[in-house]
Each structure stands twice: as C-alpha cells, then as structure tokens.
Length: 165
Image (cartoon, rainbow, N blue to C red):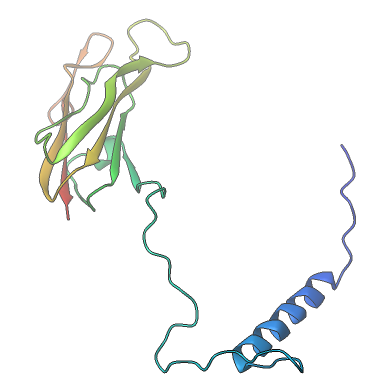
C-alpha cells in the first residue's frame, strides 16, 4: 500500500476566502485605478447564465425487474427503460406499443455464471426508449418457474405499464 501525500490544513480555507473576495469585488464593481468599471446591472437580469438542455447529456434511464410487475411507471419522453428479469425462463420483454415505447438494440436471454442444467440462471433483457407521450405495457411470459416446475397463478406473466408524459 502506498502512503497518501499529506495535505496542508487550512489550504482549502485560503482558496475559499480568495474566491469569495474576488466574487464580492466583481459583484460590487470594484476596480483598480485606471481600469474600466463593470457595466451597470440591469434590474432583473440574471447574473449567471443558466445553461439550457445539452444535446450531449445522456437520456435519463430507469431499470426495472420482477418487483415492478403490475405497477404503473411514469417517465418522460426520451427516457431509457431497461427491463432485466432474473431467469432465462422468461421470454424476451416486448412493448405493446412500439411507436410510443420503442425497442432499442437486441433483446433476449443470457445465461450467467455456472449453474445446474434447467435452473434458468441468467437474465431475460430488453431496452426501450420512450419516444412520445402515451401508454405502453412491457410484457413477458414464462411457462416454467424452475426445472420441470410449472408456474403457479400470477407467476407466469410479467406486465408493467409505462405512462410516458
């Protein structure tokens, strides 16, 4: 393990005080002799520009699993919706309204780790993008809930309602 370099205590306070002093001078229009003063402030004008939405900002993302079954999820247009169901027995999740909640990339099941045959270890996954306002359901189905074990009532269907605002 390498030792961490020592930091001088109080160094952060000195920089903070200098920053505050410079900001105070700039706001109050202080200037040194021979320099031009700051222009007068317009009443109601913002002193710091507020950046607009950036085209390079990543879209918001929400990840859902089995615990979201039966729920209504509200998202905004542009949101990525990731579905990850923890069993390869699930079919690939699909959208009931692809024009509103559009699939992105490939979907399907991926086994994970090492597990005994028939155990269903893995993930059934699909990714979607909320394209426009409206409602869509994400649906998946399974017939088996374990090796040679049929699903009981309410265990074989997955449905989440996505309300896009």
